[in-house]
Image 1 (cartoon, rainbow, N blue to C red):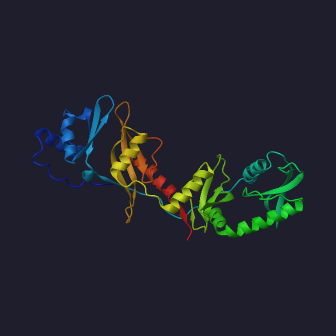
Image 2: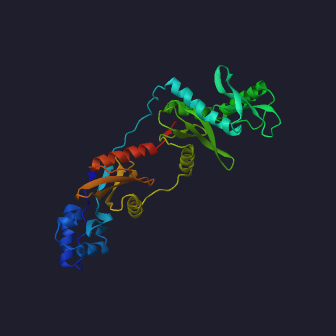
Image 3: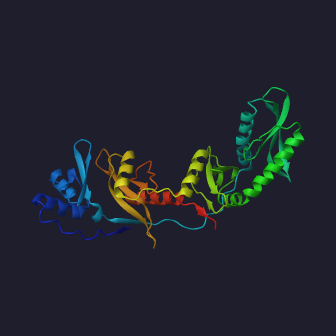
Length: 340
């Protein structure tokens, strides 16, 4: 859906006759490519100096002119809303594999590869981690250690397996009590959340990163410490999830002006032009981002999007409505679930 272009002010009498013709043509079309008219680029550059147009030079001595920011149409985009659907069922074998992978990798790191006799440790019938035997780092003899299902390793060695298992159960109960709200919130949204790891900043607990039981490699996301906010976007690396959590809590400023958005879009698509603001189609009219055009080798228009976060599309679409739909989907992913 689009909002009609508002009536533009009449061009100043100081405009030359060719600039006046360029203005009339631009008002009727909103965008003028050099192959669509017989007017010289200088006529549109005169309009650009008056704020009535924006001119983009393209390769091979081509150019395109578009209406200035004050005269552009506004796009209204429908964004899907609603409560999160229950997570899809999880393959038990896949979940068991995912739960084991990272903790056992940590075992190899803390034991420098000299570990054996790894056995699971249960607490009230639930798996809480693994106890293992290894060579003491000093080489003084064999000791026992543990790693939790959240890939947290012991801070000291034990002299007996039962001692290591007891320490593991105690550590897991304490951690589970602190993260109960976060775990419950994640379970309600994502399939097979596991391996919760805390994210701190200056000793303040911000939340947790976690892994999901998906068939894709390295599916991670985040949840706040009190479980009030759960991210929707799935990231590949835990470090990305931790950075996304910090950015959300800091409410980092994104793009807000057409100039900044155009510069950001052209870092990915140097020929991007005709950026149109796209707002959410509701009473709030929240700015979602911008839709832009990129000409292909045959002179046809392709369309892309850039969100207010600065994230730009990876591929272009053949029509503007499709680009609007992808921008709406990007907005949904950037808006985490709130449980309170």
